Length: 294
Image (cartoon, rainbow, N blue to C red; front, side):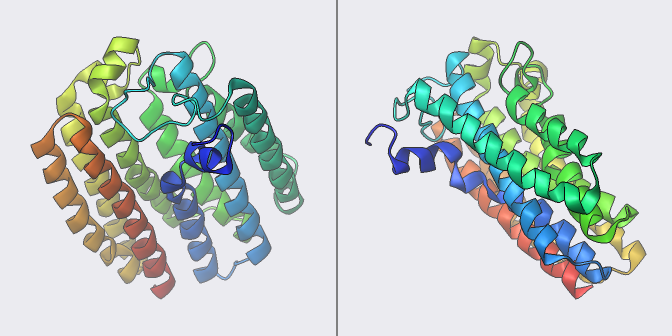
């Protein structure tokens, strides 16, 4: 692959993972639609902001995991552009800066709809994107990666996408936010389960490294199962389809969990990573359609 080429940058932003930004915005927007507050311009801005912030986080992760020794050329997971030498250090730093500026520009437009206080929300998103893996105390290296994912790929995007379109908060939106965050965290959990031995060697103390492989196995199952249980609780608000359609996701998710437990370790777990990404998108589609159907 040619250095600093378009293909290298596409690899670096990890397109397979970007559904994690689309799903919460779609769920928040669907809730806004059913509550009579859909604003297409706001929804579009929220989506672009979320995508740009995730690209920023992925690039920072690409750079700093390599610098900290967590990403070596022989890593078990999918190729990382910086670790493979496809992107130079100078270009990577420039790319991170460019994506950050672009995200902030889009976020600034959202201030028009929600007020200046949203600067603090945007700042928190930027801090998360950087300090998830960078800085003197990166969250992912101290067992807080899963908490950060649930917050910034669930609670924050769903609630604020909904709020910016409706001007209100609801318990339904919070439940949807937590469900989305838990499903998206299954991607991190299977990734950390696969990398547990490498992470332990380089001092990356994920929850799987800290508490053992069993937490990875059962934690993965718990994340998807609790997410579906949260969806079922929406029956209390009369959202029948939003409650029931995610059960189809759980069937596919459970099959992936069984395969993950059977494989247990090694690069063969990349199959489970791919299936988890697919299942995550399936959940997003089913949940969003379910919300719209009522």
